[in-house]
Image 1 (tube, one colour):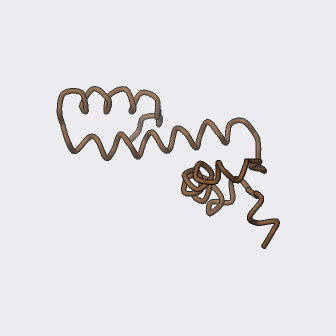
Image 2 (cartoon, helix red, strand yellow):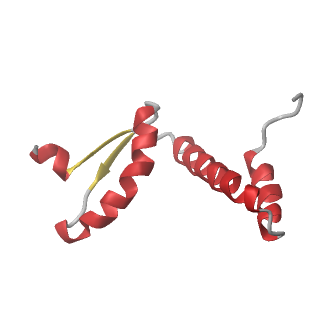
Image 3 (cartoon, one colour):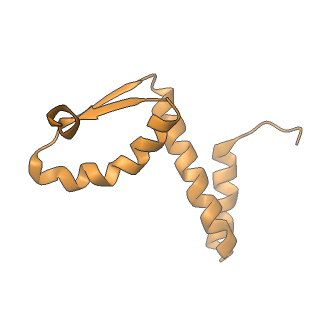
Length: 87
């Protein structure tokens, strides 16, 4: 309390804890990594994402969906892709 929030510095400290073997830090590290990834995407100022892919690459789109759905739920971005157009 009373200090500025700095995700990059927090990542550095928690990464050190993970490297020292603190298992509890691993979950926090993954959580902060996801926050930083979302922050980077949002800082780009983009709000709509169209995913163009070959049908043989559908598995990669399926792997990305959980990350994109989190941003969709928070109304940060809007995504659309082939499956959505064809339904």
